[in-house]
Length: 150
Image 1: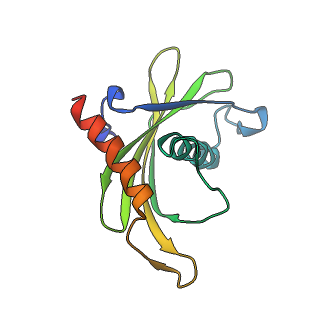
Image 2: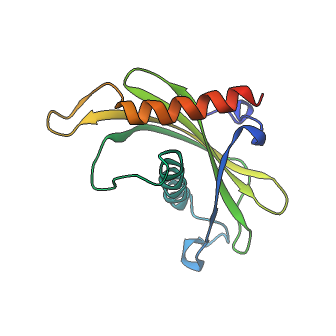
């Protein structure tokens, strides 16, 4: 992903604080690149729970990750206060796209960004399906609120 395509932080309506563990740090003294994806996944889980009004059924698989593109902008070091901020970028018939950033909470510096494509799936057929109505409603509501705040 191109770091120049990151939306202004004001367009990210959801943020969650992350806890960095000592074992997340690599020999160079910064956050290991594999940990970023775990933190982004945690951010997505909190985002989904929030936009679904706290009614996520975690036992029911309705969406899967189809693609993720991450850029590392500035190293994250142990002791920094990191937030993952998430926003919906686009909603299509069977998929939607999210953008996330990792931000140093005290300075507002963007450390990393990711764009993710999520696809609605039928777990029986393993094929993409139309986004379920409750997902569509939640995602469209988020997207319209972001657009109305511009």
